[in-house]
Image (cartoon, rainbow, N blue to C red; front, side):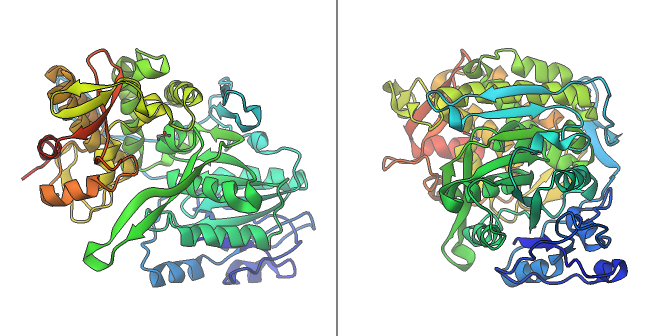
Length: 521
Ligand code: GLY
């Protein structure tokens, strides 16, 4: 649940440090002094809690009601995300195909002085106002946040409570010197918290802060935050600008590019409740996206691998976005990618963003999905032009088990991992299912499916899980996918030529075989 960062200008430094006031819904501090001093390496909310007293009357917040937010989350049955260490010694697996995987440690990256940012333009044909620019480069957020300034007088910063304070300290300073009024709305990101209730709280924060149509939202966090903040931006005052600063690999290469926004919807009760992913949402292109590979240095290994799942997905259908060599490039550079060298991460992000921007620009609203239907084995129809829907490769399967409890799987080093899957982990499993479907119905070579499995494993992603419910339950969950028609769920398959196919009315027995391919007894 979100809460607000704000200041009370009259507090002394020591008082400000301890006076962590609960922010009341709809009540926002007005005016104020200098921004909270966010402590390097501390999560944003913690940094803001220990904020120093304002030194001038320049602007903004400093106290945060994260304690209240945690209480609210607990009351709402939400699970706050585990605290992330500021500079963790992140164990991560390097791939040496000829030998057993081994562990190494990733150190947070430092900005190479010479690397210039790259800008990718996503142009929505016939609607220049809805185009966005994606700026990629080491230091673009943590060293030089000027990309986030524009002639505007106020911004609402929607931020994940786990973002280290160091990542946004320069931004806060820069907003202060530019005289931009700002306030933060803090979210403890999780799939259950990606809800209409949280969106409503952020909307209330925006309204109480008197954000106008000429102002903007800045989203800082992973896909949950950028999707939710984008949704809020699309409906607040009938739409205001949003600038996204993704802080996970997955959000950089996928979630924050292309303008899909949304929240999850929960149906049913108790044991039978289900979270339907992104069931309410809009298309709202961000004005700008700022991807700083340096913030990935401290990303936990699981989160980093989760982002690689979307990169591998892009690689499989590289031809759809004009980059046939993407998968081979990822494979050849995987060891360096896993070491998180800022240069190679910059290239990884740039190639993936270019790929996605190309696909989205051709079919922003996913309307090219229903062309060319013909028969095939195990399916009663298949379309040969998937458009943007190609990006859903593996996702129909993934969404059906992403929010399941009780799953467990083995890491590449053999350690048992339990708990709900991250989105990218579910995508990795979904890609395995989609490959199985493609082998069975589209004539994809088995060796491609095997190579995919090897690459996912090398990237530290699960390819099999224990604890999946029975086929009937999974098939029912598949039918809830939002791409489903009244004829049943639809899937994206991979053809031998590397193109993506939209498949409708896949038979239930074929679906079951695909799901069974990732079952670990
Ligand atoms: N992540 C799929 C899309 O943006 O269309």
